[in-house]
Image (tube, rainbow, N blue to C red):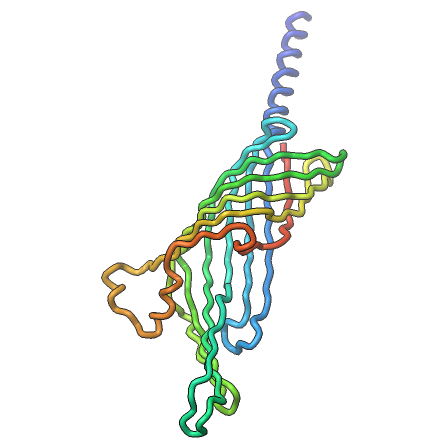
Length: 251
């Protein structure tokens, strides 16, 4: 009887330790998508969009703090602005026709990073959390495109360059997220997440071999201004707005 009692205590202790260990691990995912039309453009690239999904896994140090790993998959098309001017018309002696060039970029990127999270419990169901993260992102499918538009009609003409000029993108991001969380049940939590602050170090480079860089297509000359190193902070960094998230505690 004594041996059975000791064996029972060992099993209960082991089961309790296993449950406590497993309950420290949680799995999360959040994402967002937005799209908007670009006014005054009639071409294949007539809208901006950004879609991303971020799977993550966390480990609870205690009831307030967690550490974890986060990944990011993002696809975007971004308008970079339009330059317009009126060339002199030798036939009419004026400058009625307008010529404009619109630039844009698009890419698919993948990121991997780490985070530390602080929970603020409001009630049994409601909580807030702050996540400080740092992430490295890269993408080699980038394309810088441009559209030429002439107006007014009947001289209207739109020439799109959908293939664009290729670029590679490397981002280092460090920032702070705030989330409102609702505990739906013991294993599922729903979140609304937004970015409060972010620092982004970005490198845009030419993925082509150096031997090909000397063969410059005339239409590519103005686009090479997008290559280089850039630093963005705070409101200067493009955000994805409110992200919807789910947090699972499967064990």
